[in-house]
Image (cartoon, rainbow, N blue to C red; front, side, top):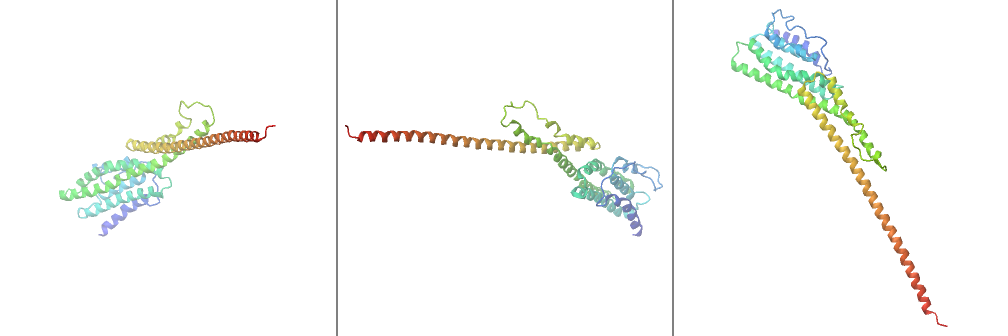
Length: 304
């Protein structure tokens, strides 16, 4: 219908610019516009349910505005409920695709951008399904319960795809931060030179570089103050595990090189000892032969 085509252009025209492929997450400078702006309707629970003020990223707020507009009293028509549902699902899918594409390399600073959107994604995954279910029941009271259940299921499946982004967001942040932490392990390679051919006693405390190893993690979390604890905890764990694994690998390489050097020295010492023993044995054997030869000559000389 021409009516819905016009509404479709209205909703997508306001939302799509925020989730273009090359768009990066940006923090909203001010609260989202009033949920009732342009509708001419009095404030209702519906709008408070889908208010964008609870979110920090402009693209997320644009998504909430689009979803709310799909079910706005001056937009929604019962006979076109299926089209409102389809447009809502398309908006959520476009938002998910935008984040996934950005994490795959479009965003120049994927870790920082992931930190910006992570809180919004978690909040959406936690709240959106229930809020949309409430809105549906306020706007589609004439629909059969079976139809409503089917619509709930469609939204739940879409929001589940949104929730699947959370592990990917943590992976991207953890990979970047762990890489910075692992660079701080490089002084470990100098420990061997510090103690080689010296009489220094074994260390009794951590090396000077150890307190700085996880400094990038502390700095990242401090800078991403909006990250919820449910994301900070697995992020810390992933970075600690990755950095510890790298430390173990470097320590094993260091120990292997020390053992190899000791084995080489041991073989050289064994070879040197064998050579010295052989030389000493040769000297003793030559002296005995000379003495025997001299004695033989004396025995064969006629007495006289």
